[in-house]
Image 1 (spheres, rainbow, N blue to C red):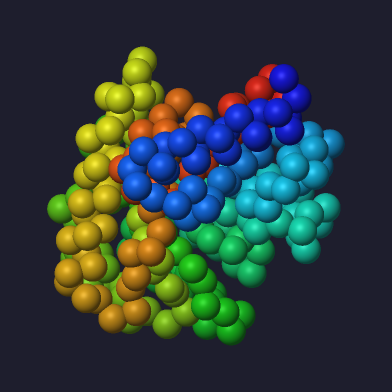
Image 2: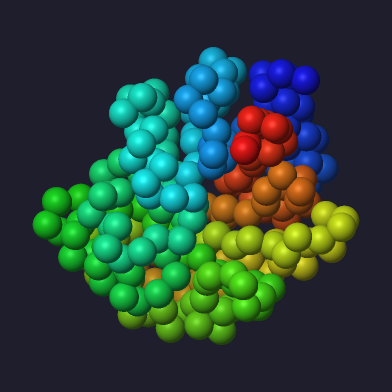
Length: 229
């Protein structure tokens, strides 16, 4: 299948999952993960009206950004080192991976220097896997209590990654846990914090994620296949 066929299939699956959960399919945004994908294949995705590209690494985003800057919204979905913050601010429309106080402080400091307000998602390690970045569920409220008033940052929701499991149904508790956490945070009414965005679900599990409330899904290999080297 071509990249355009793959995108159509993914969108149909997203739509069906949204309808199963009583949601409008248009409320779910597809982020095409372009890690290791070359410019030609990204152009094919763009021609199929994909407008959101996600990169794991700052250096890859910076390399590709000049080719697509005015055409797409960039998402930084991977771990962000504090010394790379200045390079990415103003280029990524959304950073999905805020996971520690030192990073929040550096983003706030740099945002003030550049006169920007930076949209961010807090990364939560719902599954508790040691190999994954992110705050524990128990840490999130205290984290938000500390950072919600930092100048230049705008917390818009949460992100998580589920374990790689044989059947996507096994990932459901992780996604349900993130949605429940978002509702808990809403009730705490942190000034300047919204829980409008839930970034969860990848190629192996995005349908279950949508059923549990995802409105950003990060899909790579189901779109680009072998083009992801």
